[in-house]
Each structure stands twice: as C-alpha cells, then as structure tokens.
Picture (cartoon, one colour):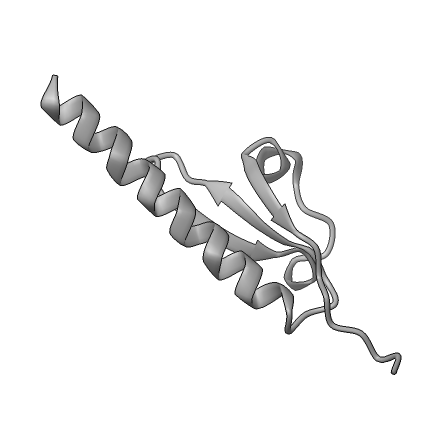
Length: 74
C-alpha cells in the first residue's frame, strides 16, 4: 500500500514540476506550452509552435496548457 502512495506522490511531484517548466517557458514564447503525459507516466512539456499542428495522439494526452505570454506590443 505504501508503494502505491509513494508512486502517487512521485507522479504528482513530476506533474507539478512539468507545470512549473511550462509556466516558465510560456513567458518566452508566443505559442502555448503543453504538459503531456508519456506512456510511462512521466510528463514532458511541448511548445505548440515547435511542431506545427499537434497530432491527435498528443492532444489526447495533454493535461495542462500554459498560454504563451510573449508580446511584441508595448
């Protein structure tokens, strides 16, 4: 039972770290930055502009989106 709890906490920490990275990245891009869950339960961040239109299999695994905040207007 403890290992299930530890896995849950570890997964939550990994998700929170990915969200933090996405939020930080969002200040330096025009594009949305997504937190995507991998097959092994880990999380990655993906800038939407890096890949053009995202494939549906990636869109289905998006858990969080940080809106791009870079602006040219003053």
